[in-house]
Length: 76
Image 1 (cartoon, one colour):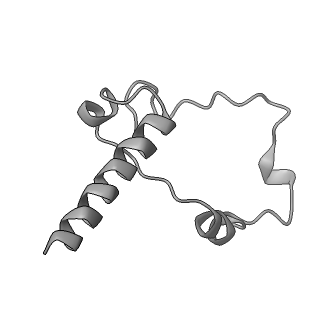
Image 2 (spheres, helix red, strand yellow):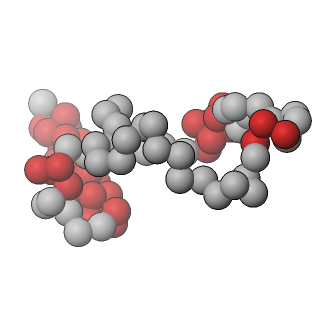
């Protein structure tokens, strides 16, 4: 996945009171497996995303494709 350009990675825009070095017990990616298991995210290319105003429009288009494919399989 590409990082967005604009802000430099060197810029630290966290407030001073957020001192994570003094916190103990933090684990990076602690919930990543649980998140992946419970989600199904597809990232659309920008030109495809322009064709769909929201999630429901994408779902309806995919349902239509599935119905068409099922009809074609039955016709064979």
